Image (cartoon, rainbow, N blue to C red; front, side, top):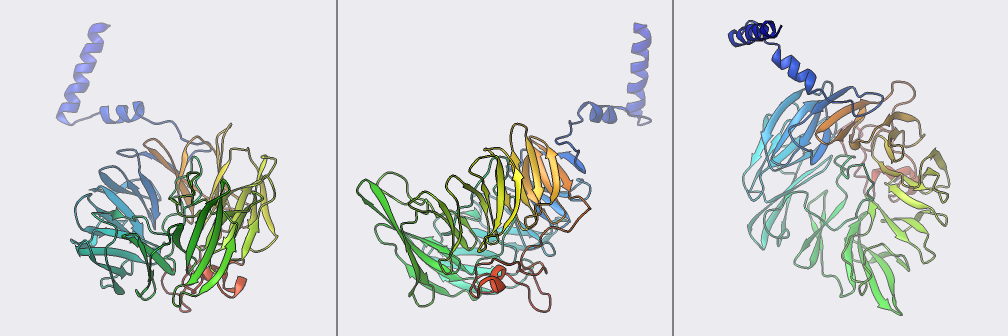
Length: 473
């Protein structure tokens, strides 16, 4: 019997060596086959070359950033489309016009790639930093440390929309999306910080340079203000306003005050006192962090320990929590919070008293709001759910310990280690909420001037589509 087995093995090796028949690739694929990462099973599951640093849905492709390379896979099948050596990658543009910026650390320049083909659409050899948005792509190049040019591009454009001059952009080579003075997002376990993908560019950006903040209008490129904070202040640009956040130590506690300034005139637009924006630590009320929030809203804590969502443009209170509730996700439209009994999560429309939906969840549940879905992650047992953010209708409900990595219009990418998989939304019921600027009607409860009728367009109407159906944003 042993001789027969050896003879059979010798025949198989000979056939494989001559190219007649080779069973080994299929055999190895069977041995190396991964267990499904969720139940129900995903549409497709693939093992990528390394543990992903970020995953983004870009049109019909999935862009996977790894430590030393970036690859793209088909959203429909998971098959690899292309691969490039790169130290960083970032996606700009919307569903119809995405591009992938890639570059190397400590090396100037970047390339803009088509996410489906990997073909280079534009190349730059001088930029030291880029910022990526759904409707805008920014880059900065510096002739020396105090002389920099900021340029804005349409994501697939070939000529700058505008240029602005700044006395620096921090220092050194900064790669993709270095920090600006804005807000910090709420985070959740098992939900990636970049799950929502690129956002629309805000009306104003705050560039910190040598202890000052330079406020740039993203529509025109004008540098509107060049402000130095006071000794007890932190500056933040939110909702089309420059916020001066003061934290003063007295009587063993921190006293806070917020003054929002008009970017063009410098005049005070609104002010609030006694609201803690979680910018300071306990050591002398030194403010080392940006305020928590998202897009045009801020998260504050009142003196009675109740959380609140504040409109960055006009200072309105859009939501105030009950004692014991905990905010876990927010954007310009909705707030998702954990109930005081820690047995459910609740979604509310900002600026109204309307409860949109309630879902049973544990006291450790986390959530994230994206343009297309609200994602809720729970433990013991491990679950991931994607819900229509306005109605709470289940788009997907999974038993899985994987993380939510990226959410798109038709589904989401989940992953665990090197394994990633695609979950497609259910086909029954209404479609998920469309993001502002993607052709859908702006939802109520927005935060721009003019109240709900102008809400999702942002303070300057920058987030709504052109009347003739133009570009995203």
